[in-house]
Image (cartoon, rainbow, N blue to C red; front, side, top):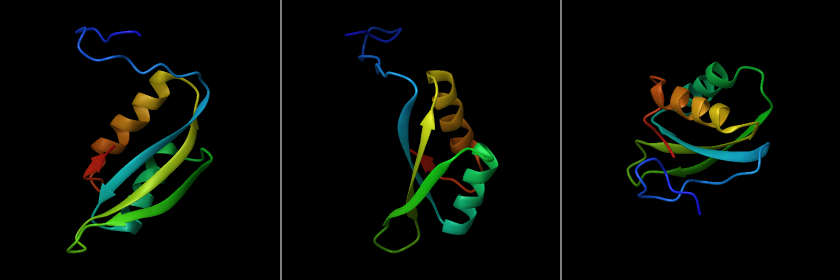
Amino acid sequence: MILDANNKQPKLELDYPCQWRYKIVGEQKDKMITAVCDVISEKEHSIEESNSSKNGKYTSLNLDLLVHNEDERNFIYEALKAHQHIKMVL
């Protein structure tokens, strides 16, 4: 087991390249899909609807794609998280 820099949590060990799933939460499905395209450009991916909140205000999508290394995986996560049409990325 490898611990993170603070020795508190185990660091995720992945064999790259690998398939990765991001769960994206936002208010408008169309705008979230546009945000994904803004971030990953022409990179091959798949998007499927996941869940909606009880009152229907929020929806979530699963984004699946091949990532080649940890830097790419983290870059995509941060770029999605920072996009104005995305409320949360898991």
